[in-house]
Amino acid sequence: MIVTYPNDILGKKSRPVSTEDISNSKIKNLIKEMRAEITKLDGIGLAAVQIGDLKRIILVLVDGEYKVFINPKIIRKSWKKIAIEEACLSVPGQSGYVKRHQNVTIQALDENGSATKEKYSDLPAIIFQHEIDHLDGILFIDRICPV
Image (cartoon, rainbow, N blue to C red; front, side):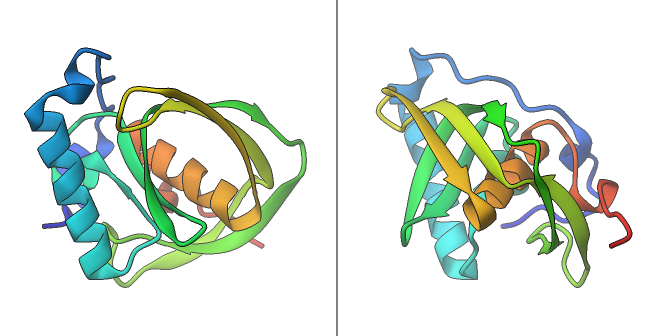
């Protein structure tokens, strides 16, 4: 079940997942629940906080597949920004334009605990920034700007 605004949990900062915890059943079940929810809603990104768990885990649709990113960080971003109309499963019925970096490099752990570092552009880059904002207690409605 998706947590919706104005629920207070959406404004809280999520906690990192330790490498030891990645393989435990609680984290595996959380990821399974996130996959089920995002698939059911046909979403393109989901943060664990959106289903009520303050763990630094996101799922992002990459090349037609939902990939898991644990403790994701943006380690590089382009100077160039683009404004795109965003919406969110946790803020139903609302949308607005947000300026985001056109390119980002993400560092994270995958669901097996292996380190990954990838560069993303355009819509995937926007999705990562949106979902990582969730982990920091920031909603897209906090970033809406005039176009």
